[in-house]
Amino acid sequence: MQKVLPVLWPKDLSCEVGGYCIGWTRPVICVAGVLYVDSRNDAESILSSVQLSDESAQLSCGSSPRVIGRFTGLDVKRRLVIELHDSEATTLQVIFYQRPNLRYMEIYALDFHIYDFATPKSRARYPTKSPLAFIMHDFTSPTVTPSSLGPEVLNQMNLGAFLDQSLRRRVHLTPHRNVWLYFASLQRSSHRIVAKVFQTTLLFTNWGDGNLVNGVRAIFALFNMIFATAQQVDVRVEQIVSIPSQSRRIYNAAGPPTSHSISRYVNFWNEIWLILNDIIIGSALGSFLCENSETLSSLLHSKLEYSLIDLPQHALIWLNNWPAGLKLNTELSRFYCHSLLGIVAVWGEVLRWIIFPHLPSIIYAIGLLGSLGLTMSVSALSDLLGIVTLHLHICYIMSAAVFSQQLTISGSLWNLFRGKRYNVLRKRKDSWDYDVDQLVLGTILFTLVAFLSPTIITYYALFALARLIIVLFHAGLDTILVLMNHFPLFALLLRIKSPLRMPGGFTFRLAEHGSVPLIQIQSIPFSRIFDHYVYLGSRLAAHYHPLRLIRVLLGGGRMSSIPRSYIRLRSVQNRGDAGAYREKP
Image 1 (cartoon, rainbow, N blue to C red):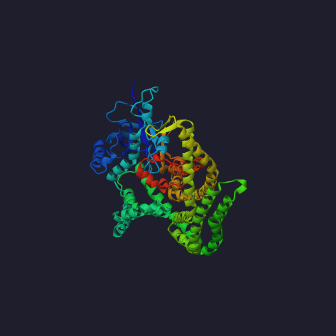
Image 2 (image 1 turned 90 degrees about the horizontal axis):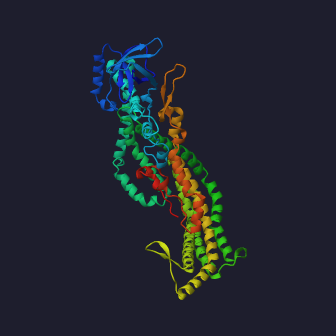
Image 3 (image 1 turned 30 degrees about the vertical axis):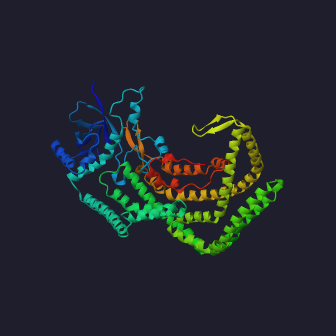
């Protein structure tokens, strides 16, 4: 019984003229191209010249390329006739495959991700193991031969066009191809010149070697934890400094494209597009703010003064006068009212005499920052919101600290009455026999806590609600920052314009009605383009989730906006494992 061998044949290869087939024989016969020469020795000499060049290391995939056999043409039934060398098989199963266009960075890939790194969530949804690995571990399936499609075969199909071009360059160069190669080399050299000029400029200003960058980051280390504007400046500086190195890695890379090179290409141009769109939108918004700074200031002045100064003072006075018949502890309520009113009054004077008179200038400055990008204006607005609400934040911290201590005391007294005690060494609650004096003291403390609880809870609820509203405003601004900094705009447009440049595997079309089986590149699904953006959005949703905020409020925890480092894609990449994010109440 004759052995049937599958042969992968390029679909765009001419089948009218015979020649010698060049390609790989392991793990499956994969034809890269056909040399139209007179003898086998001529074909092997041309292939040897390619293997002796610098391109030989890139062409080795599972096995080295060789002269597979001689293609003689088509038979009566329009089937390919191939005479294999060093093979006893006479029956061949020809399978066409769509040869990638290397000029447009088209490849077969199973491990392609939009970014150079993959989050744990995306790795779980889209494993990078080959289909052969899964089949080999299935004990119920029949024995699978090594000729199944896997990473080596896909790499051979990717390198087929590259090998064919290398062979054709050594056979003959037509005038049209000479012109094309000239312009291609000119294009590569122009990219190198632009990257070199940009790198030299950065080195001249001491930005390229990283010394000044490290110094600036050392200065911004403290400000990054406090101000959103400093964090955004650090993001933009990091992106600008990385542009020359990314450009060199993309346009100076030798050989055919890979999934990692395409990821770097998409990352590079996605950052460029996001920066340009950020500047365009920010300039439009900034011009509006600069032209209408006086009008916006007059509209906001009275509303801000009433919301930030008058309303908290009225609310504190109202709570001190037994609101809605709720009889609070007089002495404790008076202490709360006078202390918090003093904080609100002091910061209110700062707002009235320093910030509000210069509100037109502040709005104008935010508009000027818009020329650097919308994200700079949004970051400055986030910092301004934190500054004008500083007194409410301080009042919230004080009331939350008292409320948290009250919950701790209540829990200790509850354990006392149940005859329990917390074991610090074993970190558990053990039974314990208390003395009569301890029980009496616990009863007295419980009485004090019970009578003071309504007053403490009332004032805490007021400023906790105010803090919740402020945090929700910060959540909206943080969402805009994530949208403008990490939206996969270029990847989305590239997926629409050239789907094959975003590989997501391959498809195998079976033979129907006398046709030949065909392997084609499958583009990446739209859902995978938004994987990392959805992951950052899930971090925002996890931090600002209503149930989490309610749990923090009821537990007396510190309610704050999300740290900027957790919504920054580059910091996730530097940490390597982005799944270690944990929220503290």
